[in-house]
Image 1 (cartoon, rainbow, N blue to C red):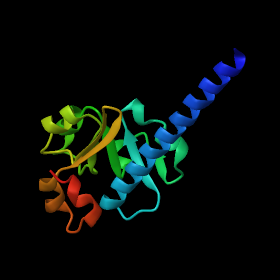
Image 2: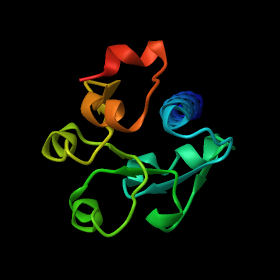
Image 3: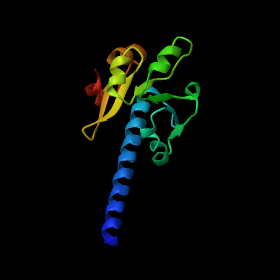
Length: 142
């Protein structure tokens, strides 16, 4: 009986670690589109993404959005209110509904749906702010 619990615990740990690594890798790839920095400072308000900082040495969590290269959030309302006062870094919403509500602000969305990661990039903002986007990301433009 103890062996069964150990196997289940080990399987869940490995799956969680792989999921965390996958999230970190995708966030790092997205951030590399918008910044040419090796170490990427991220301001994160979605606790579901806290684990990405444990698994990637190039992603650094910062405690202030004005020190960040990228903002991850599941609620862009706060940033919409301060957008005119500050030059905000790119905002990636972690909820599709939030992205749809704030398409004038969010550069994209990275969220899970039916157990799979989904990426949507805002073509209007990307074409306005960034000249070149890697070819492998064109299929994610909306």
